[in-house]
Length: 365
Ligand SMILES: Nc1ncnc2c1ncn2[C@@H]1O[C@H](COP(=O)(O)OP(=O)(O)O)[C@@H](O)[C@H]1O
Ligand SMILES: [Mg+2]
Image 1 (spheres, rainbow, N blue to C red):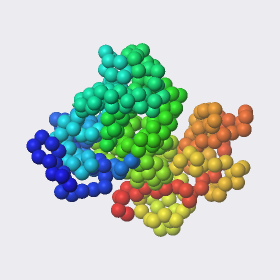
Image 2: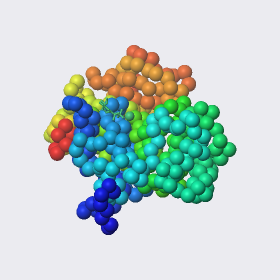
Image 3: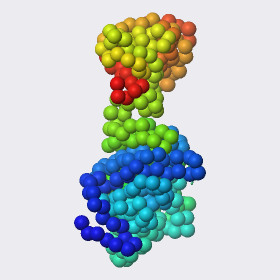
Image 4: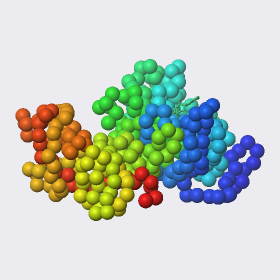
C-alpha cells in the first residue's frame, strides 16, 4: 500500500477488510464520557446501525467518523488509512445530517454539486452526476428549486443525493427520518434501503428507533451511556439479547429477575416458576408478548391463571398487562370482536417456556 506523507492520511501497518474501523474510541467532555471505548468495524457494502436512547453517544460517534469531532483517544481508519486527525473533506465520506443542512441560498442542483466542486470535478462530469443523482432519488424536475420550496421528504432525498454525489467510500446518516411524519418515514426507510443497496455504499446509520434499526440494518450496534451493549444482526439483537438493557430497548418485553434452580427451572422473585432446562444460577428471564398465548389456540407450553391489570386496544391487536403469580407480564393478542379483556378479568394464558431467554447477570456464567 502507498504510504503518504505530510498532510495526507497515512496507510496503516495493520490492514483489515473493514471499510471503517474504529479502535477504542473515547470522547470526553469535561467529566462526561460521551463515547467510552467503542470499537466497531464496518464491512464493505454493509449497512450498520448505531441504535440507542437519546444522549447515548450515537451522533458523537458518527461525527468522529466524519471528522467533525476529534476523539479524546482511539483511532479511526477508512479503507485502511488512518483518518483520526484528517479533516472531513479528506475522509471520503458523505453525510446526511439530522436537520438535512441543505444550503438554503443554493438550488437543489447546486447543493448536489457542492462536494464535487470542492473536489474540483470537471464541469461536464459534475452536471452529469447531478442529473444522475436526481434520477436516483426520483426528483429530476426539482433541479432549480430552493430548499425552502421542497417538502420534508424531498429535502431528505436531496440531502441523500448530495451525500452520495461524490461516490463516497462511506455514507453517514444521522437520524435521517426524524423530521418526517410516521407514514412517510416508513416509505423513506424502504426507499433509502433500495438506494443504498443499488449503489452498494458502506453505510453507518444512526437512529433511536428500534423498528428502523431492525428493518434496515445488516448489523446493529446497541449503545447505552457511551458504551456498546451488543453488536449483532437484527435477529441476534431481538432474539438473543445479551443484556437486559438490550432486551428492554428492542421491542416490548418483560424482564424478570430470578434464579435457575438445580432442576433447570427459573423462579422469579415474586415466585412465578417457569419450567425449563436452563443452567443453574441467577439470571433474568426475557418474556416477549408474543410468547404468551391463549390456551384455546392449543399452543405448546405451560398454562397459568392470569389477572388482567391493564388492557389497551391497538386495532391490529390488544396489549394486555397481566398479573401471573405476582409478576406483571405484557402480552399481545387479537381477541375476537367484542371480547377484549378488561382490567380485573381472569384469563388462562399459555407460556412456551422453551422460547424464553435467560440473561445471565454475569455474562461468563
Ligand atoms: N459539544 C459537546 N459538549 C458537551 N457535551 C456534549 C457535546 N456533544 C455531545 N455532548 C454530550 O454527549 C452525550 C452524547 O451526545 P450525542 O452523541 O449527541 O448522543 P445521541 O446522538 O446518542 O443522542 C450527551 O450527554 C451530550 O449532551
Ligand atoms: Mg444524536
